Length: 161
Image (cartoon, rainbow, N blue to C red; front, side):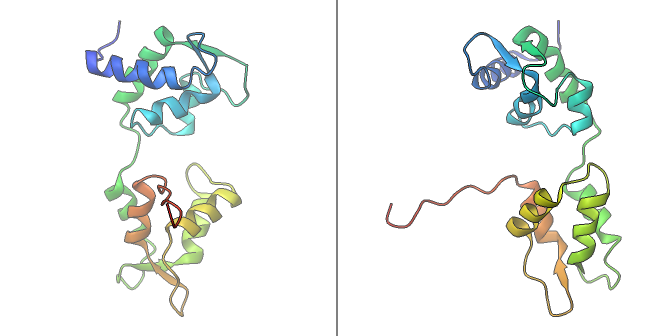
């Protein structure tokens, strides 16, 4: 079958069940990437599509028996970056070697390289993760990167609660 541990299978079944919105033992393939990310994996969109993920709802449904081999395969994938990899890439834009880069270059990079972000996605990430620019338009890129790789921000409780 797969080379997943009992714990991996239990975790996969739990994550799969969360996206089984109808309780019918199937998950719409549009949510394949979400289920994998819920299992602490970081597949690219290309990997999700290669594994059977779809871009439209109701094109394809996956049973858990079909999902487990996908989970096992993506778990083995080495084609994802980590903080250190991304830091090395951003250092290429650090002309003064002072830990800063132009915020405009960061925006351009997010919009044009690799799996390109949309303008709205780029704006949201910069708003949530980027420190204010200095007077010359530079930002420290290491704190930005730490915020990005740590995942979505958790919402603080509203005042008075």
